[in-house]
Image 1 (cartoon, helix red, strand yellow):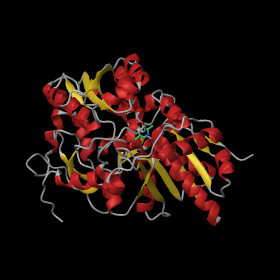
Image 2 (cartoon, protein in one colour; image 1 turned 30 degrees about the vertical axis):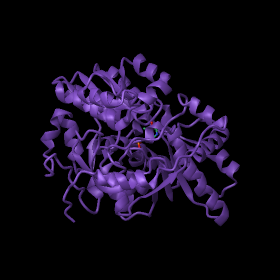
Image 3 (cartoon, rainbow, N blue to C red; image 1 turned 45 degrees about the vertical axis):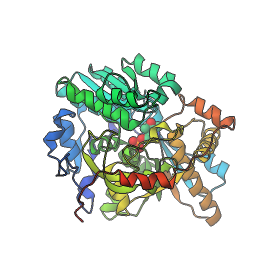
Length: 454
Ligand SMILES: *Cc1c(COP(=O)(O)O)cnc(C)c1O
């Protein structure tokens, strides 16, 4: 019998996170302050606690995982890796497909990996309240649970359209003690200003971030927490790839290609960067593919430019691929992928040709998700379906060429709270939406003006 499930022992949970900055050929461009000059890290202290800021700007290759965080990781980590024998057979492909399943966390996705670390450091710093945003509710539920574990109150600004569409994600957050508001709210200046202009506004991640940041800045006991995009979040997620490397070692294999869904970029980075460490050290080349929706194609069609991380311009300016900070997302179902930008590190590596990106349309992602569920059993999150689509496409190319490639897929979460979206797919009601070129060109005119040193 060939092995299907590749497990690690609890003692094999990584003891350190991997920081890719140490291995980049060029140092990252600094974030800029409102005056256009490189930001002094201390300027971030209104919204982040010191240990988080330290990690955000660190160039140290290995960063210790605190024992308390590792102990909590032990509740669901190491996560299992599977060889997708049944999917390979269904596709009749000579490719070997492996997937790592992050849906075994209590919150149902990889996001708890960073939520626990962020709650831990904030608690250490004496913080008793955190604000955050959530789109589909994955991040909000992870932080609500992590806050509960460390005695921190969590207030979640949830994008209004999701608040209506995903009532059970909302009750999940409330079950774990999170306070959930539909954003835009009347609780912040930003929210009131937006509602005055458009009382029907359905919100966006950019607006929810602005609200959460505004509140954190205005209160001494409160910091802000972000579920993706930033360097420290990517860092925390590297437990995924570090474990995966050990799991490949156990079966004597190594990936030729890695696929992960890409919203802000944290689970992609978490799965791929530890393999990049091997590449940087002169190891075998690995193709790392970030998979995004064609309705929100920040990497594949966005501008590489300095832009804000939120809609109102409260955050520092970051050099990244962006569709414009005032991007209003179309109502696609992979809510976790509807961010206007991409992480600075992922953007830089894409710009330098170290990683690849591909955009896939919505209907094809659900088709892939259903194929996966029928072969492997697990019903994937709509976000994860993007990476499954790209993996299946590659496996089908291998069928044509006869290549026996090893493909590694990060199955970032389960779709148990997304069955309404599956319902629409199964009922033939889902549509594709190609983000219009005109909107991309217009966004360019509204990017903040920054003199870029080449
Ligand atoms: C949030 C989310 C993503 C995308 O976010 P990244 O920051 O790019 O990782 C992917 N899959 C699931 C299940 C998510 O919840």
